[in-house]
Length: 102
Length: 137
Length: 130
Image (cartoon, rainbow over all chains, first blue to last red; front, side, top):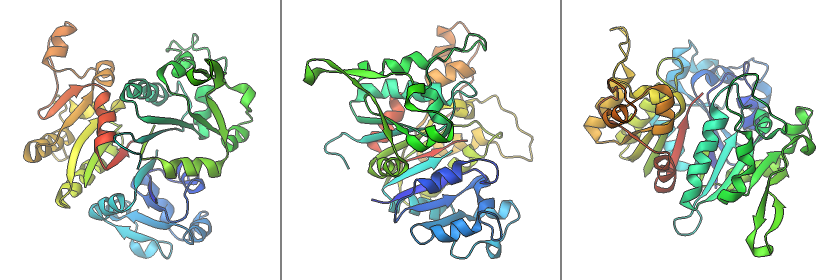
């Protein structure tokens, strides 16, 4: 019964991402949207933790939000998947529920 | 999924009261939602635990002190308030800092029982996984 | 699949309404159904027709109204939240003795029960906020 978690805050400013990651269970998906996409970059203070998390949950980032902030798919931590809004809808449909971390 | 038309609603409260309207308007949804006879649980984590703090007094800031409403939730059949232990500890709080919130159990000679349940982080994660609908505030 | 969508912030200050709009369009493009879009908290401010953004910027209220017109989507503004923030339809304006209403085309004002109903009726409820 996996969950899609959405996070929309930069992990460098707010605790939403940390709190989300503290509450994911095996098989869940986490989608970074809006300002949260800056947390998907490689080389950040959060990168090691996010790489570890990928053993139990799948990480996604919303492409239009990424590009809007001057980030490129090449800048991302390995294994993070870029999706568009249609991919966001697919993720919501594929999981049993959507939990927003605001 | 729960049987029939009953779904498990989980309200996630992560913000302190009074600095923004989210706590108050979340409570308003809970009160209205109670009439729909769904399976309702309230989760308080991160700064949301401050919503249940005892001794709130808003007279100095001019806004409505809605904290007393939480104590009436039992009358609305809202009896499952889950407070995350780690969130309390991180903020230097313990259960004694929270308002006593109880309900009368009609199946047990109207005995007063606590509505607040302390859960650890892993249990909170399970509550999310078990919900049909998650409303975040 | 049937989606319920909740918008908890107004236009422009936060991205929530934009993201919800693009998500809603993608839901429809994907052949899914939108049961309802519910506007709560400052999200009710998406439903005033009195916004006049600069011409080179998007007009979120218009975008929502057009989506409602094209796809028959139910856009519901929470009455309690709307009253606090000055969003009125004709009957609410009359009831409270206000000189005019400002609800935008395609939006309607109703109670919080509509949010709970969306949670019950939709297969997925997706919340956008800040």
